[in-house]
Figure (tube, rainbow, N blue to C red):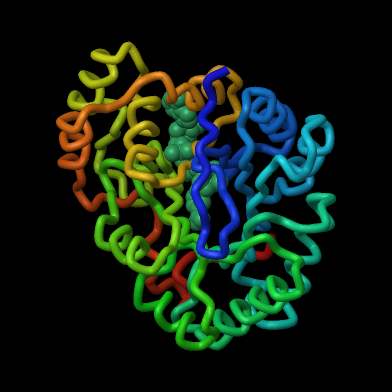
Amino acid sequence: MNTIDHKLTLNNGKQMPIFGLGVFQSPRNETVAAVKAAIKQGYRLIDTAAIYENEREVGQAIKESGIKREELFVTTKLWLTDFGFDEAFDGYGTSLKKLGLDYVDLYLLHWPMPMHWEATLDAWNALIGLYNQGRIGSIGVSNFEPEMIERLIEAGSVVPAVNQVELHPYFQHKDLRDYHAKHGIVTQAWSPLGAVDVYGTRSTGRNIFDNDVVKDIAAAHNKTVAQVILRWHVQHNIAVIPKSVHESRITENSQITDFFLTHPEMYAIDKLNMGLRGGQIPYENQNGYGVQISKP
Ligand code: NAD
């Protein structure tokens, strides 16, 4: 097995695998098998969220995996409809119940709510409370820009351990990564393989899987485009959570330890950045929430 097992140290001293499985849009009836296949393959981090509506299946897979709980790193996220202090405590309780766990390793605020800042702040303070009670391994945020993180830190004096953001060769978020590095925040990439043309919200017809630079690098290493992109992330110390429900791809995505990208290859991929998002802009106004919301 050559699944990557490198860990990053978070700002509270805890360790988080740099590599894991994402389950956004994993249908419930395929999630148990996918998560079990991933764990069997050596994945130790699973990334879910209340809004993905598959926490129950993730929990079932963990239970059936035969791997000790403490060897796994489970992330889930508080959805916007549960922002607020008491609401966040309740939201965490509901997630734990669905997962069948008594703690998660990482709990994230899923999106900022710039137009509902008080609720965002109250939710963050609830996460701090849960963390101080020892009920969560680490706390962090997702889709936050530096000025929002600054406001959280000012209000609660706690620096998020992780910011999970859209990040792939066409959208490299270098300024944000530099900000994270300066403040000891781990960058975790969602849509590491490129959401462009997957979500279609900002589709331009460009798909990283068709990119000749990446295809040539992949051919030179006898690897796939997906493996080269994931390798590029981890060589930049960016945590990745590629999603698939297909066992062959789950295996393929994990096999990135037996080759290195050279400096010129890394630089060639760095140069592909186009600032091209596939997903939503966190601050874009949609009823003031930044994203469409509905109750999980
Ligand atoms: P991804 O980059 O993991 O996958 C994009 C697409 O590539 C998917 O359709 C997938 O099926 C496909 N794919 C996977 N492996 C492949 C391979 N080897 N070859 C070809 N195609 C392959 O994108 P994602 O699912 O959007 O993001 C990964 C994870 O990040 C999610 O599952 C979720 O856990 C998390 N996420 C978080 C947020 C957030 O707001 N925090 C948003 C989106 C996703």
